[in-house]
Structures are given as structure tokens and as C-alpha cells.
Length: 277
Image (tube, rainbow, N blue to C red; front, side):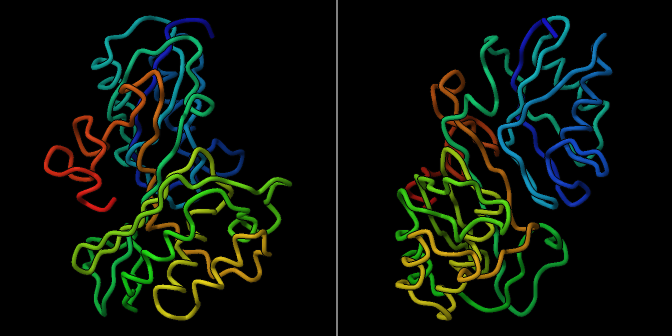
């Protein structure tokens, strides 16, 4: 469809959806977003997302691009789309973009964050929003594992069995671990990921942080070892598509999902490096 092109930042609760992608026999977030935008257009609207999230994975900064058949003020398009969307999916921002912009192909990098709650009790308000891991982590061991994971490696052991492409080399630009009281947050940033890669990364860091596996074991996995030698896949409920960066938007940086344009977790209240994220 010809017309005006936009990029939108999308937030959603993933518990009620079988991932981002439109599917034949299950409901994806892409489908409900396309249905909402199509009600504002004389022709069906097709949406391209920055990344495919698994069933049950959440997002606060998923980016999507699409064309509308007429020009919209960004704020009015945001309000109109949200009127037709279910309450667990929201358009957070809308930006006009050039015709060549593509939320998937134009992304410089994508960032995921995984939230783990430690302890013998977890607040019920966090059910379905974090991984409740009763065992404590050694923060020193977890951060050592993050340092091992950064850089270019063969992540074949970090991909879902049967879904790994022939080339499984990826580059992790940032892997960070930060703790706030009983909450641990693991941040992973890369230009692209393999299927289930972040959740398997979390499972492997968990094995090292709990003293069940060594750093030498983790290093060996990064030489293209088999998935069967890797640790468990962490649950989907703790994972969030956090943000993506584009040369055309935000000066090549990424919009903070929590407000403003600061890249830090706390926006203007603290820098990302100060937070360890």
C-alpha cells in the first residue's frame, strides 16, 4: 500500500499471545496491531516488527513500521490505534519515517532485558512478569559470565534445537548484570539473535551464578558446542523486548521505554553506566 510511513513503539503483555508474529492457528501481537490500524485505513495495514518474540515474552520497546493511506499527526494516530487495541497492547509513540525505513532491516541493534526475582517468596503482583528463581545468585560469578559472553562467538549451543541456522555466529555488543535488592536484571544487546537465544543465555548464566557450572564450561559452549551440553531455557515470562536503535530515529540511539530519550534504566535520574546496565 502506498501512502505515509510511520514507526511506532509498541508495549505489550505477552502472556495472552503466542509471540509477536501473526499466525494461522494462534493469536500474535502483530495481528491485533494490524487489525487496529486497518480500522483507521481504507486498505489493510501490514506491520513489520523489529524482532519476533516468543510466546509469553513481553515488550516495552518493540518497534514496528507500517504505511497508512493518509497523513496522520503522530499523537492522533497513537490515540486512535490505542482506542481499537486490547488493554494489554499499547502504542507508546509514533514517528513519521522515510519510505525506506524498515523496523526489522533498519535496526542497528536490539536489546532485551530479563528480570529474575530471588528468594523464598515473590510478590503476587509480579506473577507472570518475572522469573521467580528461589536460589540466590553470586553477582560476581554472574558478571564474570556476562564478560565471557560478550563479543563474537558461535552460539549454536544457545539456539533452540532444530531451529538453528547453518551460520550460528553472533556478536553480543553488551551483556550486563545488575541487582536491586532481590531483583536481578540481565541486559543483552546485539544486532541479531538466534531463536530462544536470550532465554538460553539466562539459563546458562544461572548455572554459573549458582555454582553449578564453571566459567570454563561456559567458554567451551561458545565454540559451537551442541545445545544438549547447554543449560535449561529460562521461562518466557521474565523476558522483555526492551528497545531497538535506528540511524533515522533518536540520533542513532534508542528511545528509553520508560520516558524521555535517555538510554539509561532510570532516564534522567542516572546514566546507564552508573546503573551497570
